[in-house]
Length: 329
Image (tube, rainbow, N blue to C red; front, side, top):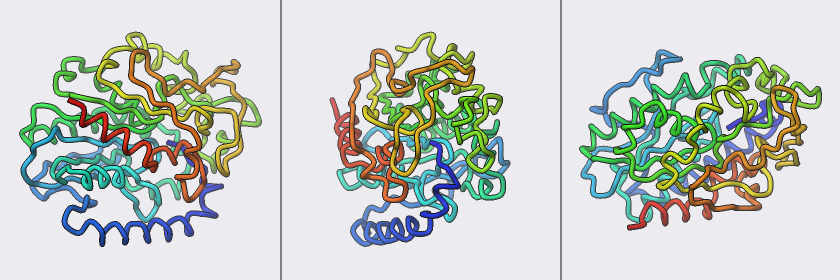
């Protein structure tokens, strides 16, 4: 997940107020089954390999009847809203599942990039090595293993958004035997075939340091700047691996990391990859062989920037699809 600080700062204060109001309403409505913002005291402490601090996350102790769900957010996001990130809507999706029968002990979110406050000091961290797939697979993998051990479950369901989808897929590529521990996967607007933000074209404003420094040589763009990067070529060499248990939910009309069209307040950038080649990224979220749900007009669900890429994670259409898929026999 990528957001422009330049565009976002003007609206972050308003958005924080709106989301705070929503959070207050939820805390009142769900007092007996609220998804929190902490991990149980006796849950293993896992240090973030990039930050050297404990991973953020949410979860709860208690009996487990359903397959536990692990939520993996996207780049520059958090599992729940923080003082530096007004989004964090994985928690809201988890709350939706709690409202429809899941116990909070069955809902787990991992935060693998901290609270994002370091981005205010250095926005180029957004595209740095610390935010890459490779850097964060060990953290997410350790968290998944810890959830399995803590809950005593034999399998988990995995729900990812944006970069989180790629992290899940890369973890399974590196450790294919771990697939036996995964029942179902949901990939929400994942960057499976790259992002549009890495072009060397002067019109690509994501290259600016204030907007994250997504230059062709940045670590994120070395991974995701083209469907032809060595990383994505390797990841997608067996693209259909685990697709038989995967639901892809994608934006079919606009998404500022894939489509060269206006997405909410974010202007489009040229459809050119990190190597300078014209490239259609609009199908990036697809995964060969997976069940696919195409959604449109998801920008209405992003109350801050109006973007479809962020709105799709905050969408009742998405939430209902996730619930339905995870409840399938």
